[in-house]
Image 1: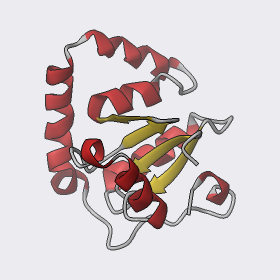
Image 2: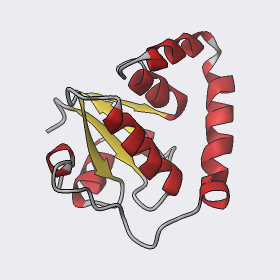
Image 3: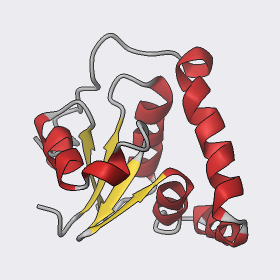
Amino acid sequence: MTEKNIILFDGVCNLCVSSVQFIIKRDPVGIFYFASLQSDVGVRLSENFGALIEKTDSIILIKGDKCYIESDAALKIASKLKGGWKLLYIFIIIPKPLRDAVYRYVARNRYKWFGKKDACMIPSPDLKKRFME
């Protein structure tokens, strides 16, 4: 299962769900698969990468046996998207503590700024194959 590029996301966070939809539109070949942190798959993968994943509660990228969190995850995802979004990877030159501080600030305030759903996102039938259960 972890040989795929899997994005774990907060399934009740409006910003996270919008980010997943944004990624899907810019990933026409299906590089990324998705699972909410609240799903059985999300919980199982979280347990596999336990200590690292406990540091964050928003978007996480699992590539093979590696796990990326915070700004590293966001930039690695952007680097694989169609269009000019790849250029965002240039921000990797900014020191990680500074990038992650900005990322954590947004993550801490995401419910206040963007809202929260009562239940996890349910993918449409045509997108269901990209979501892991």
